[in-house]
Image (cartoon, rainbow, N blue to C red; front, side, top):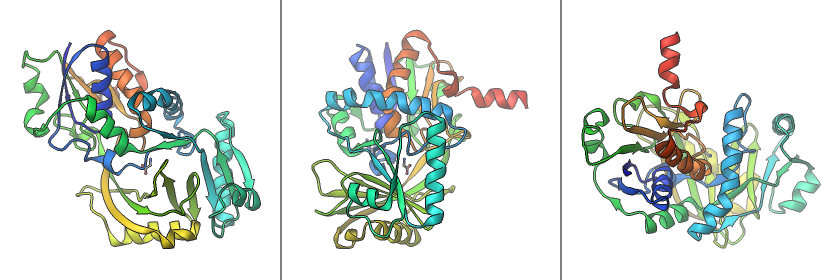
Length: 347
Ligand code: GLY
């Protein structure tokens, strides 16, 4: 097939790479490849750490995609940081939240180890005043910028404004392509724009020789923060705020302050780290927080969008789903982008 992919973030590039691997003729278009949400992402591959009530499909998909990551990363020549993830609570109320998360994980049959303060300190000696927590052995991490760079090395991208080329209803008349895959993150072209909502995330990068050994997800007096070390590097990522809003994704003083406050209390050695950057991007949220992968309702247009907090984790699975759909028509019903139109019709 001759396929056009709009958007060169981790989802568009992974989909394009999978289509190329399967022998299709692929054109990827993006004015600024890899500079959207993928550029901000911390790269936690943490289906358990991000499990939430009522999100059974997300758990199913996250676990399936996490299982694909070792081969996906190896093929790209990017290291996986297989350290597991520590959940750390700063006070008794935070620990109650961690215990609730553990109960939820247990009900889903997920392995997690409850840790006393002492056990937590043995696992992550740099932690500050924490009262206890847990260890998620299967939640790892990867550097999304390295992943995008490796994908860009094998997927040629035409640097052109997606918006000019993305009137799918009109462009589908273009006989040059058998299908268009729309993977433009939080900014979908019409008529799909209303399917995603922007959820701003601010995220920081610092450099230190004294970062944590593994991913630390902390609750610090009700404030959640994660600290992600990079394999073989001094980079440490501190994230992330989460805010529903309609405007540009900008870094705010309050966002930086909250993240640093929580991270420094969790891991006091971060005080000596060199500050590198603070950036903000919009996460592409959907109404049910599940991605949109499959037929758009416009002939020849497939969506691969709306990955919200899970774009990096779900990239290898999404790539397969997109390619399978184009080749066989297969659809994962939970991700069918037409589900919201049906809801509207049934309302
Ligand atoms: N998955 C982490 C975040 O969206 O902040």
